[in-house]
Image 1 (cartoon, rainbow, N blue to C red):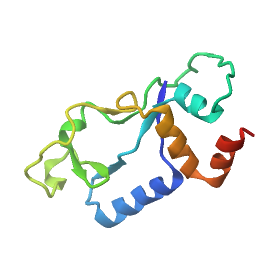
Image 2: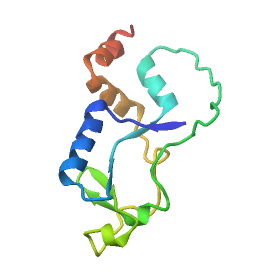
Image 3: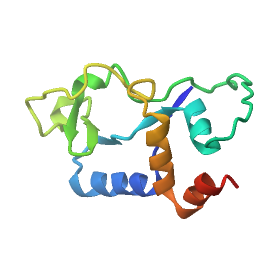
Image 4: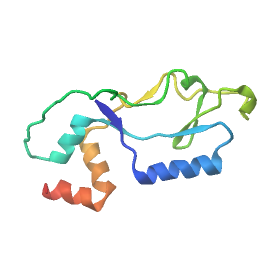
Length: 137
């Protein structure tokens, strides 16, 4: 199971980018790291050798998240730190020539970050997580 890792600050930045730079009908998708949930658990456990219990997926839960679908990838362009999904209706698009930024879906199953990268990311997320990572409490 994998998930995208989106901080509250990054989510707010995405909303502001869409408001200030977006055009009608566009959807802004932040480029964010993804990780395996088991790696997140290992990063938080540190050096402790704790057992992991796998309970399976819950009804309706997905194994991987998809931020840009297979159908949307051909009308998705890059703008800095974001993928922008252009409107389906061509008359709403200001861009006439589109060079797709993606060749397939943008999914959390691809390009997962390592446990060491997770520790760095989580350690910088907040003082609480950083304290937890160093003390194990």
